[in-house]
Image 1 (tube, rainbow, N blue to C red):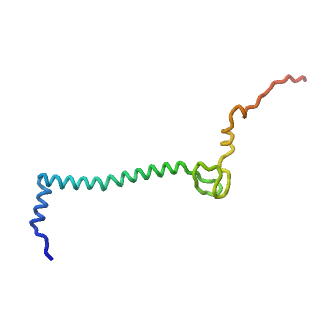
Image 2 (image 1 turned 30 degrees about the horizontal axis):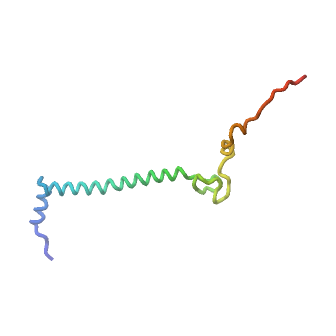
Image 3 (image 1 turned 90 degrees about the horizontal axis):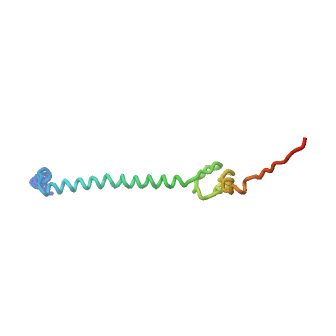
Length: 109
């Protein structure tokens, strides 16, 4: 098997070391490849983190059985417990239906 000539390696090293257009191109290419291999995983990791946080904000855990499901459900799909508290139900009632009219009366003693 023939070894590559040392002249080829020396020419390559000289192109990289000396500021010739070819040497600058090789250095710029190496820098670009380095940036691609470092920035793309960081960008993908950031997108994944934001997506995970968005999904996590829309998930509820059942207090009775511990299963997790989306917030849009009112009944746990595993155990059947009502997830919405009675305070949530009362908050949806209009104030006019929840007020009590009080009439004062004179009491003779």
